[in-house]
Amino acid sequence: MKALSEDDEEEVEEDEEVEEVVNLRNELEEHKSCIKQLRSELNEINLLNAKLLFTNKLFKSYDLDNSGKLRVVEMFDRTKNIREIKLVYATLQESFKNGKVSKKVKNPITEGFASKAVSSTKSAKSKEIVNEGSDFADRLKKLAGIN
Image (tube, rainbow, N blue to C red; front, top):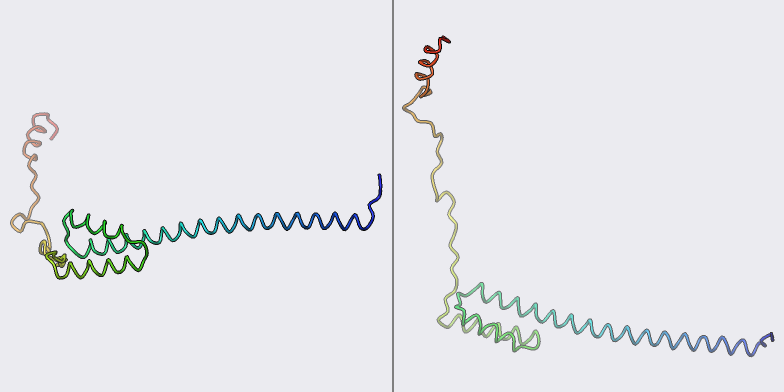
């Protein structure tokens, strides 16, 4: 085997370093593409969450029939960013305030409305305990001769 000269060793080291740099650049590009994909998915999820939030706000605030609910959902489906969603929400809210749609009225809960408090269920008339079967039991004991 031949011994490598210093120049040959330096060339081999440079080739290894170049190869390592190329590998690192390839990995970096893969990571960048992965980050782009995840960022776009996150933006899409945020957009869907905003649509859902504002749709639910309208549904809870106003008494809508099924066709009204369908129109609200269709309006939000057409939006492409958060600014448009907020604009559509404000527009729909104004139209519901000025239109026929009634605002839901919450019924206040009144405590103690069902019944009054009662101290006892014991009857005031009967002071003694009723033994319905005691007479019959005494008769059977007498007949059996157990007395």
